[in-house]
Amino acid sequence: MKLASLLTPHQVMLDLKGDTCEKAISEIIEHLISRDLLAADMHDELILLLKEREQQISTGIGSGVAIPHAFSDNVEQVTACFARSELGVDFEALDNAPVNFIILFVVPKKDYGLHLQTLAAIAKMFNNCAVRQQLQQSETADEVLEIFASRPSRTHCEK
Image 1 (cartoon, rainbow, N blue to C red):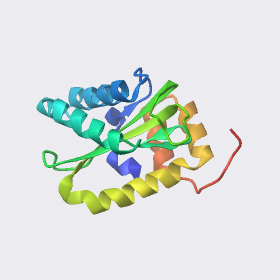
Image 2: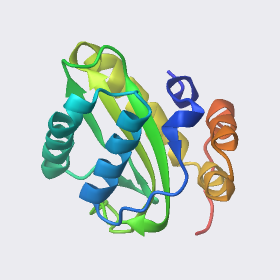
Image 3: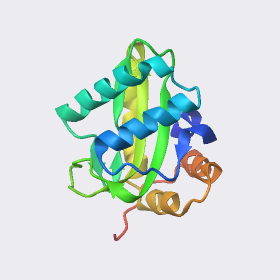
């Protein structure tokens, strides 16, 4: 499943303000609720589920990327959001670097297997330096979605 198929312009945030994992996740959940993509009464449950997931091991996978995710019986379809932080977020990432790109997922428990495949594909895409550079330079949600839709092949680059 392509990330672009899970996102609309309403699910792209290009000016994330939160500078800690907790603040960033809360800001993203509030954004999704404000766009009627998640029910307001799910706020506390989702914050708790995402916090518990982060306590197991950071979802900061390195290269400035984090993929926080949680499973819930209270959602019927995968709900995702891409957020970009100019200053970076402390996610206690595997490489100890700040996170500039966050892809948050809330997944129905029944879709657990599909979700793991999607996570792997997204992690591989974000391993592509050109993708990260293009996302950093994007000015609109539509540009971000075009990058995700094109999903270039994996390449390495100098930081």
